[in-house]
Length: 313
Image 1: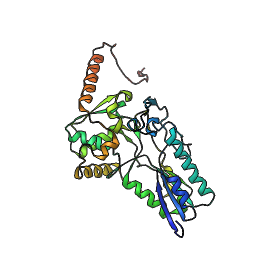
Image 2 (image 1 turned 90 degrees about the horizontal axis):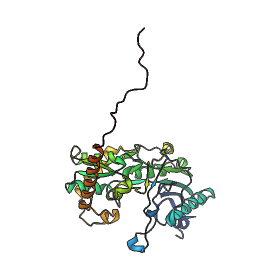
Image 3 (image 1 turned 90 degrees about the vertical axis):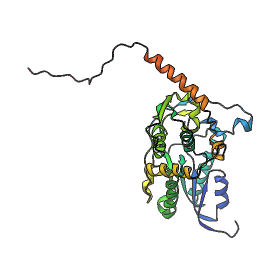
Image 4 (image 1 turned 135 degrees about the vertical axis):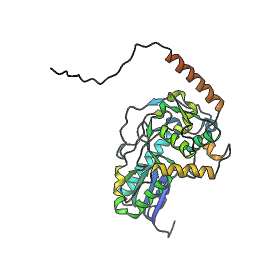
């Protein structure tokens, strides 16, 4: 780095803390791209290496979130696991460097990113199932849990907006997400619509703890609840979000034009087994349970609004 100087540097994930240290004295503005280790949001099992590599047994205990509010940037991060501790350490180091004049720093916190060329793309789990002729999709908790997501083009636009207006972005932390938080149900239905299969797809609800085939694409399987980001701080930047409908269409079309063969890198990253025989066993059990519950004779149910019906005198 000796004798080299930069107006701006974009560093993300990985060795972000070390990159920032190396850039001190050589850059004016650092755009630091990180994740969202908010309290209770990250699966502890996702912060360690796979059991196949470490030989250690992982804790798959399910936790349920009570809160549904949008998470603000000033919420302290949760140092869950060794990886989470590194994330918090890096976030602290970047903000300290800014406060002490090492460089202007902007921190961007990304949720799950979707779009063409995205590593570990959960969209492929749904696309492949539909292309393989599957029409029943397992969705935890009815698919009604909502999360913030970020289309790749929106991710890039936010970075460019932060670079263009350093006076607005320097010293700031921005939660980055599309304008519309998304339910898993709408996400699956939208992918099916692009493939012309919207009316053929049936989403089958299962408790999150029992919906193991859905864990690779449902995301946050062990922290079950809404994961919504407060993105109001993005109003500081000259930035406009591409709508989800456009983003998911571009995403599906890209996968159709660039089909992934079975066993390709994206599937290894997803760790989706695509064991349709096991999924069919779950469907059979759920179908039988539904019939058994419907056979229970409950008291006759009636519903009406609770207000009185005044009568004319």
